[in-house]
Image 1 (cartoon, helix red, strand yellow):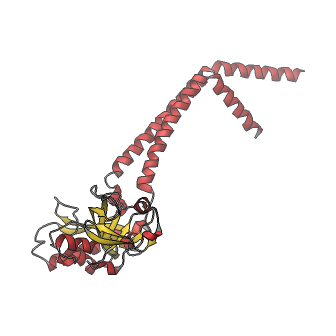
Image 2 (tube, helix red, strand yellow; image 1 turned 90 degrees about the vertical axis):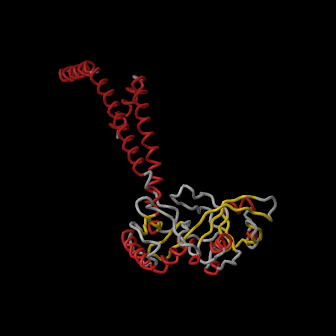
Image 3 (cartoon, rainbow, N blue to C red; image 1 turned 180 degrees about the horizontal axis):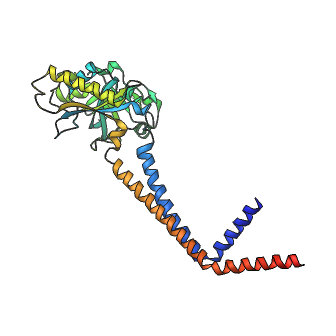
Length: 336
């Protein structure tokens, strides 16, 4: 430790004696380390950190395929029913449809982001209610008036009052009642750029289908109306590859059941891990950027090393003189 303290004092004296060299070295290292740290923070948040759901590695997105021109399409009502009936790799499959709605009966009319979801949607994502309850199987009845509020909207519109559960209002002209509130950290993550990040009101999807199509059952919808985003939770131990094989078999059964509609090359069902689908577009760019900033950090370290090497070469005569003087003192000491 005494030797270490002596080395540190000597290093500090050397740096203070050469302020220009010290400033250049510190600035060079600061730029390299700062850029690397900033980019790594982004890479860590996007690529490495788990998604904010229970067991996020078991979550997947379900897409339909319609050949090379449409490799990732949404799901129709009859396809959703058949996927749930035929699949064996998932605990459950759920769908969601975003839309815009108008709230009246709570003062001034307000336009909000809304979404209709199937009964298993929140169970698939592993979401628990912050107040009241979340969707139940009974809410698949098109006559259900239950709605569920985003936590932030519940606080801003109802002041976070627990008595808001049971409160009634009109949603785009239809009477509804608040049945529950979502947790504060819940948000829907989907690679579809059209999907809104802030959905204030969640409703059972069959009621929306009844209002729009006049048919509240999924199987009664047109097979060609693809507008549902599919989510699924894989069973424990099931890999995305196994889930894909299972849904490939499901696609074959659907095609066999309805050959006239799928009489073309390229029909299928695609299973993609939710995390992989979210980062698919940005992963290559982020990895290239991370490599670039690491290279910049390497250049910064090399430049600082060159500066110190140049400084050391410039002090060669000084060091030789100090060595000579030290040796002279030692010969004199011996003589004395």
